[in-house]
Amino acid sequence: MLLRKQLEFVFERSTIHQSAGRDVDLELKAREILYAVGAARLAGLVRVEWNPRLKTAAGRADSREKLISLNPRLSDYGEIEIDRTLRHELAHLVAQFRGGRRRILPHGLEWRSACLDLGIGDEVRCHNLPFPISVHAPRFFYKCPNCAREFPRVRRIKRAVACLTCCRAHNGGEFDARFRLKRVG
Ligand SMILES: [Zn+2]
Ligand SMILES: [Zn+2]
Image 1: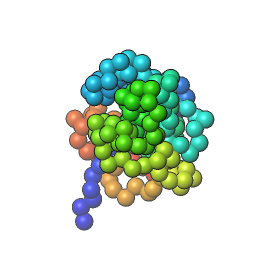
Image 2: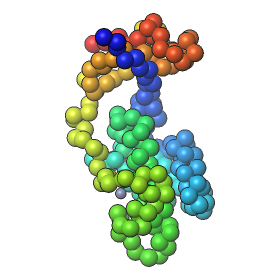
Image 3: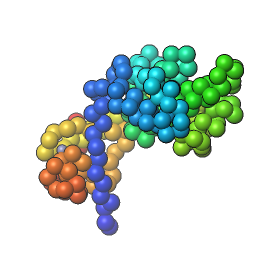
């Protein structure tokens, strides 16, 4: 049987940058997204922060402050989930921005239309994290034999997974068995 090969990036951000405070990278990204949908003024004002006080909510949008707050636990779910939550919350800002002083429903027509513009037309979620947090606490720990980075995982890795950082540095980004992750602990 051929084992599917896969490269993984360690989510270092989760332990270093995503604990609390503003995230300059995500702010830049938010600005780009907002410019792209023609909300230039909003793009100039928006701020994005990680807020550990959020418990079950994945994110929050404060239209008055133009502030997006994200739950640091989101990083356990990976970049795709972070991106989606960012867009979900940006849709709230865009909807209120377009609505002006009008009072609009949080997940009403204006929000839905903003979601479409932001590339998440299928968004149905509420703000809660997709699963109870305890289910997603990592229980399996892997390590790159080369750089010793740790890869905490919720599930056991069944594929041949190698460290993307090392594969990039030493093998042109191709899978290299020398950097295959090893279970530890
Ligand atoms: Zn929402
Ligand atoms: Zn490595």
